[in-house]
Image (tube, rainbow, N blue to C red):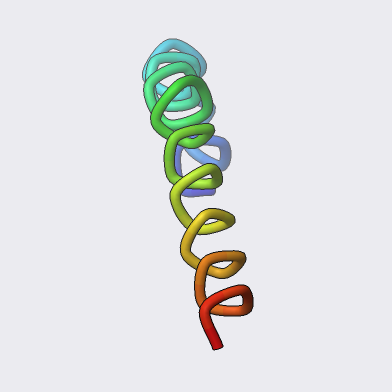
Length: 42
């Protein structure tokens, strides 16, 4: 949000690309796997 308010478009695009791509998908897959594993083991 601070980058958006400062109208820093290029750094905002870089951060969005780095955090919104594969790393975010990997975190989602890992969290889903942990949640589902705990429910099936118990």
